[in-house]
Image 1: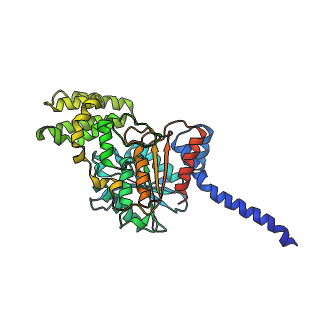
Image 2: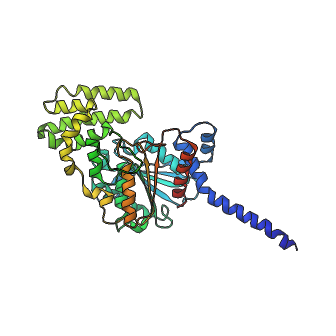
Image 3: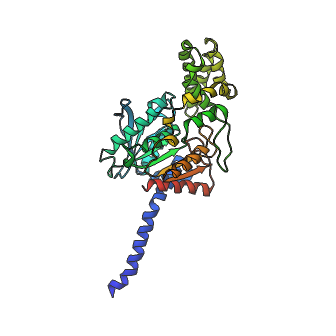
Length: 387
């Protein structure tokens, strides 16, 4: 009699435990969303309180075929079930970039270990298949360490152009079965198509999406990479130095406006000593004159875009689930890139989840959002964190 009386109670307890277990990824994702989005108030305070304590370890080197690459671990307290490789986009600060370090801490606070590793070519404003080699080697190195990969698999999160490059790497035979999931945050599907958009404003088309005029930062990057094609060889170093100064100033606007303005002033001062045509080109960069620079660079796009750096052109799709996250008004890599890429991967047998959101711009979450949009973002990340 007593045993029978306890059966309903046991069932209720079991159901509650199951619901709690199923809800855990959503709780972790909501906490992550609140912290990454800096929503403030009581919600962020509760999220901070729920986050695990994070330990940032000293820098270490990861062996790759392109040489040793600097990386940094962010470890949450307690047991580690999954480690992710977090790769930033095109930024000279690499893993020291403040938004990247904040994201690494927030991800680790959600209970996953994070290894942040910047790609040398992207730090130098170059988008090449060599970067996919570096990602492939890093994942292979991590997956062989039981402390990082208890089940032999690693998660991957690539931001901006590192998102597309991560997808290229994830489909390669050496690590294809060692990847738990791949997240492309504002990434590209076809590099040539994106470079053409930055130079001409012409983007891939997708239902419900409008084409937004490109950001001037992108066309400055193209000019930096292709300087040897538009000015005499003896002018290339000085022109690149001026463009690099402008790009650094642009990056500093997210950190310190006083430093950024001082660096912009330096870039303008670097115009006068330059011979033509470099002086005019740097002037256009400083004036953010995409209208003049775009037609100049458009004929060289095919030479700048390495097909092997595009996931749509990769011979194999990742075996692991792919998560494509994109701001619907991105002005560096258009949102249509993720839509076209999702269709491409699905047609080739890929398991893809796509989310276009008004909450984010280019690879950052910085807008107030409606409840429905926030829930979509939480659900998206919950699906990732449970793997």
